[in-house]
Every structure is written in structure tokens, then in C-alpha cells.
Image 1 (cartoon, rainbow, N blue to C red):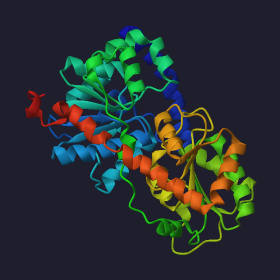
Image 2: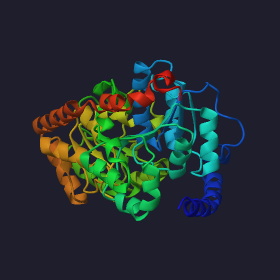
Image 3: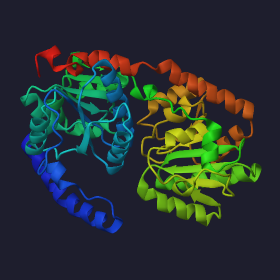
Image 4: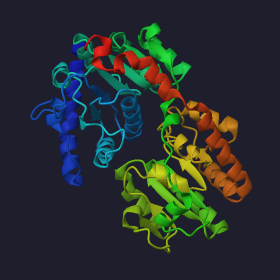
Length: 435
């Protein structure tokens, strides 16, 4: 089964790599980083054996990884950490954290190697980690196989298998069962996630429900009015933030904002696309509606501006911007993407709107709806109606925001439960036989 998997993977990369080179040339973005993916050329910075390798695919997972790293260093000071990422946006967030010497910043960052025995084995041999942590749903069979063959424990942290992705994994159960049988611990978000990991082949006794780490993400220490000033918005304005939006969600967001602005001429909008390539289409959509707007990167924050909307064109600032929100819509949910992090605005006491596509955030959405701090909208019309209702009733809006924050406060603790469960692998090398 591994041979077939390897052959299919090589075939896929033979198609994808030339495409990535072309896209890189056209857009100016980095290409596929073949040296890092093949583990050729300069080795990662040497910090001796016994550190940790953490893999986090993109921005959301990297944010979790930074929180996990900070907590590990509090418990076990001096743990060197190498972080691999699967996207350029995730890499940029990790490097930004390293640049400002954040508590959870990794010691070094590289691209995840191709999931082939050679590259995966070479990186493990170079790093000689005492354990490998994989954030959420990244089951790489050859990574797990190479680690097991070298006696390196593998822990899946914040494990999640959504109803949408589970059938795809189950279709290749023979392969994933062999891999998951070698995983030392799966710290799953929910009982349903745990059941799916067991159904795929993870050993039942090695799968624990520890909760969702997103409840434990640090809340930005940002003053809402100060952030409004940075946005160039007047004090007291109703601010509608649409965060992590997909390209197709710009139109319904702008329709909802247009209706809001008609009812409240002082209302303001912040539109934050999920992916950098969606910024230009969002800018075109704003211009087409004749909305006065500015890019976040062009505002110096020294004075109130004459614009009605801000388009966020940089990564890593959205959690802070939510502090300025009167209400928020979280994207990837009106389109079949599975939804993005609903808890960032909720943690700041902001009522949260989201669409019906919630495979990635189903438990968080259910908790917010049950508490009255989150509101599901089924379509464009529903989004506009809920925006107008919440914006027009300050008392109800503030109460909903308080209930949203209470959900996050109540559910905290997954991080410590995860570290407790994985302590035998994450502690100093001498604590578990000198791995």
C-alpha cells in the first residue's frame, strides 16, 4: 500500500510543481521550495538532539502551534522547536512571531517535506527530535512510518476529522490504518472526532478527548477604540467585521454592509479575505459598489479618515481587529469550506454570524448558538437581516457578545489537558529513555 501511495504522490507532484513554478513567476510569490521539501542543501540550524518537531499546515494551525510552543516552554524550559508549515501564509506568520521574539516562536521554520520515505527520514535524522507533534488533520503516512522506525513518538494535537473529510480518509483506510496504528497519541477535539480516528485504525487506548485548543488561544490585549483609531474610524461607530472570507463571500458581505450603511450612515466595514490572492478581487468588489475604502497597509492610524471600509491586506492582524467589531461575520461558511475560527471574535465579546457550512467548526458553532452568542445565517438574505437586527439593537448586541465570551471562558482548559496527556513525550529527553 505504501508503494502505491508513493507512486501516486510522485505523479501528483510531477503535475503540481511545474504549476507552482509558473504561478510563482506570474505572481511573484515563492515557488515550491524544492530544497526544503526534498531536504537537500543546507540543514536546519543545529540545536542538538532532543528537541521537538511541530507541523502546522496553515495560518489557523500555526496560531495554535505558537500557543502550544509557549505552553511547552513554560513547562519544560529550553525545548528547541522546529516548525514545518504547508503554506506560505502559515510560514509568514511563524517567521513574524520569531521576528518579534514571541514566547511561542519556533527556533526555525521550513516547509513540510514531501511525504516520501527519503525526505521525511532525512529531516528526522537531521533534527533527531524527542517527539513530533502534528496539529489537527495532517495524517502523513510516511512521516509516521519514518518516525516509528526511528523510535520517535508522534502525537496528533487538537485532532479533528470532519464529516466532510472523513469519507475521503475512509476510502483509503488500508493506508491510513497502518499509519494511525503507529501514532502514539491522538488528542482529539470531540468524542465524534475520537470515534472517527478509531474507525480509521488508531488504537482505541491511544485516543483521548482533550477538547478544542482554539478555546485557549490568547485573547489580544487590544483596546477597541484604539483599534478603531488605527482603522481611521470615528469613536462609537458601528463596525461590521467580515473575517477570513472566501472570494465568493465578498458579494454577500458587501450587500449586507450596503443595507447597514443605508440604515446607519456612520457604520463602517472591515473586510479581511482568508487568502492573499483574494484581496484584489475584494478590492474590485468594493470599487464596483462605489464604497470609499482603504487598504490596512496604507493607513497610518494618526487621524480619522473619510473612508467607510478597510480592506485587510496583511496577515496576522485580524484577531486584534475583532476588538473593534460591533458584530462579526466569520467566513468560509457561506460557501462549502467548512468555516473558519468562530472563537476569535467570540473571545473578545463580539456576537458572531456564520453560514451553514460548518464542518470544521461544528462544535464551536453549536455552543455559540445554544448560548445566544452566535447566529447561523443560511444565505445572503439571512446575513443582511441579522446584520441589520444586531446593528439596530445595541442592548441585544452587547448581551449576545457577552454570551459569546462566556462560551469561550467556560470551555478553556484543552491546552493543559493535552499537555498532561502528552507529557511523557514532551518532557525532557531524559524523562523517557533518552529519545
